[in-house]
Image 1 (cartoon, rainbow, N blue to C red):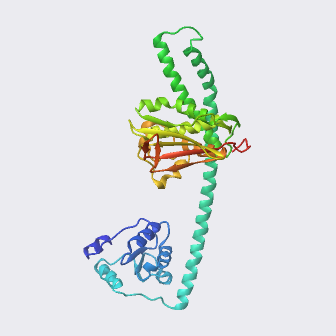
Image 2 (cartoon, one colour):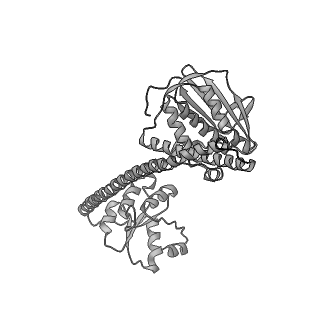
Image 3 (cartoon, rainbow, N blue to C red):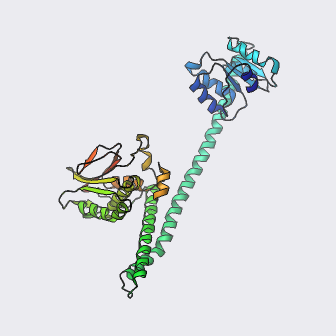
Length: 388
């Protein structure tokens, strides 16, 4: 059919199934629609009914093509004409030209048209019931797989964390030479191993947090703490990341202390996630700025950078677990896409939230930072809850 119509001077656009056909027809507003009644997704009858519901396509001829004798049903649902397979190659292009000029076939009778339309409506309802049942079954299976995935994360994290504890302890003893003196070369190797173990431990902690996110039970250990001291410890823990990339860190920190009530360990990890994210997406020799402010009821940490920023359409997606909007950078710099999800849940569990500004309008220590800015906000006194 494409060859015959192209030879007659027509432009032909194909759709692989009924849903794609509806989308293309609504988008390009064709002069005529040829629809095979036996197509996947929405069948030809359903496609015709859907297209007839579009005001912009109300006058577009729709011609049904099938090997079965469904002429009256095709016309009843809104088709202009009906062509039975196999098509006659010598007259096919002329027949399409007639429909383009306004020719239209009529159903055998009004009563038959009503009967056919009613029968087709019943078939559509049956089709929808079948699809709903399939979707319900698939949804139940997805929930089952999600629970299994969460249980797997929890089990594997605990299984890996158990042998990690003595490794961390013995490495510290060796580095501190509590088990005897070591050579300069041995000390260098032990320090490198210690860094790798700490990184692995951080990944395990993130996996444990993910299980808490997915089960809705991220635990908080609330106590008195200093927000400013927590911020400084977070900055110190990622200082090497900035140094490795020759990035400049500028700070606007008030005089302390800034006493609060919350979970400083979880808060520090959330801060580290945001700082590492800034380091990851800021180019070498770029700048990252940190500012701490206090409102009447909350503390805020703003981390802004001179990177490429984040598209507005990705603002919500980046807080979903395992979502990475820039996989190339993530593959280069590491990460599994759970950090920002943990940040948001931690902040909300501590009576606050996190917000994004991109492009950023932040100026920290006189340095304009036009990339992305993440602002962590937590209540000075977190809600009296142990589970979030």
